[in-house]
Length: 121
Image (cartoon, rainbow, N blue to C red; front, side, top):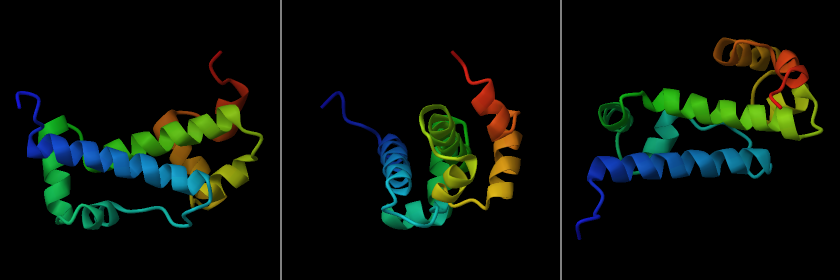
């Protein structure tokens, strides 16, 4: 069993799998609320602090940063590949539209509208 995963690696992999599935559920309208770190910890049957500490120790980045990065990837994908309005994308990801614009600009450096207009080739 030379390829057995360590417990921290198992937690990280399962955490990322849960994030990915949750974001798919949001986009497919099978979920209506954005999970918090506490929700993922509950699904993993561990304390949120244990999840956060394990992820940070194992990856060097916070559980929240991983989550924000994944949300941003989905947001950019929707802006790039869908016919949905920015408002619809915000609501799909459970943001108020004005908060989505602020959040997007903070993490992406441009507004969703600017990103959509100047999206990479």
